[in-house]
Image (cartoon, rainbow, N blue to C red; front, side, top):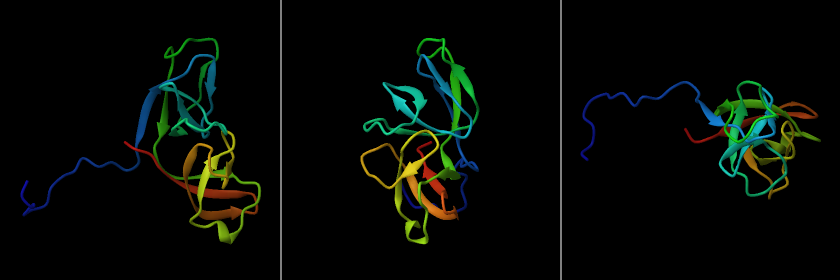
Amino acid sequence: MADATSARETGSKEGCVLAYDVKGSTSIYKGTLTSFSSGYLTSSSDTSGEPFAGVAYETVDNSSGANGDETSRVSKTGVHAFAKGSAAVADLGVEVYASDNQTVTTVAGNVKVGRIVEIRSSSSVGVKIDGYC
């Protein structure tokens, strides 16, 4: 394809929120980290091999349902606040991983979430997530 010679629309949006089928026997809570387990949305944990999905946009209770009985929307982009055991200026720019569905750690091998872009307190950080939309 040739170079563009005028302005063009790309269809981009501010932020990105997508919906996914929720894993059976699972509850997703607004503002928590989510991952994919066998293709279904679940709460993030320190389980390696589960791709990061995003930050839950809403609470969905599928605790008594089967795989895919409920769907939940997740935010795929942006900066979100999460707990971190000990946060310091030296953490800026460092990649973080899910320790549980509301806590990040710098220990590699867990579900990769994003990078620390701000220190909010000695135990809270702003994490820039860059999910795929």
